[in-house]
Length: 431
Image (cartoon, rainbow, N blue to C red):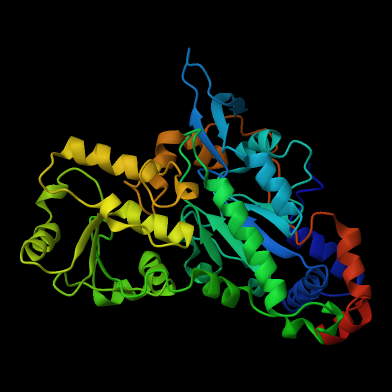
């Protein structure tokens, strides 16, 4: 597995050093190589797919003594964990691999990822693009396409926590959070979306003769295709939120990832309940005391057209590319907290939703933040290497990172002899 998961920097340095490219020249050379790889994949009608792991593909939790596992038992630094694959996982990965080069990008550490891969990809043939795991030098709050070295014009991201992708939000296909419910159909929905996206991208840009692409710079942009598929799902919706975004100012609403997604789907965001068409509320203790919710109900009683809905409504719209019927997500302010929680969970699980394929398991109490779930899972999974290993004399493995293409150095070197990018030209460009 070590060779398959070699760092992209290690692969690049090894190849580029052979071409007499110095460390100072490496960034420019890396960009040239990334463009060449994108051109190659484009002509093969392949796209890049960067996939999150926890609560997107699997659900993991510490296995308590005497507890019966619901999935596969793995051990991370001596601690047992129960790993539950999302229903349809292997079929999803198999079919996605036919049109995409798959990358795995997770905030879990190296030891955890190595163990989970024995469940998810035991033959190490799925994530041939590479694997990014957390390292002490990496952020836990931010992901970026620059790390797997994917050209953003051909990259699709699947993640239940879209807020970490603020720099690449236009590439994200959000999915509802998987929490172990075996009735979940999230991967079926994603599979359908990816197939439609792939077909539309290569049809839209008339790639009957992909050799007509004159240069890597002329590759069309997947983000415009995604925009057309999302359409205007939230057109006419002016959305206010309560219990979701703690710091609400005009400035934060401009840059907050959820608000940015609303605008990408054709909606708008407002601070004013009096101006909104939809008040989106989070189910949590004390929700009935929300000033914004009370004002929305006053407007409803006065005959104004305003919807007060649970956040599952917004998540289903974003993940399914269809606007749900609001009445199935309505906040009933006359109910007690327990009844409201039950109703909200029913909608979140999809027993009443408009779109059966979107009936994933997500617990919408956390719209965009996975941190508290991670604390519940274990510090052993999301902790740093020093967290539980007291044997400081043990030599640690190099943390995993994403190779440009984990087929290895031979494929990287081949890129120099195709698509008008060869070693000689690369050296000339970087001099």
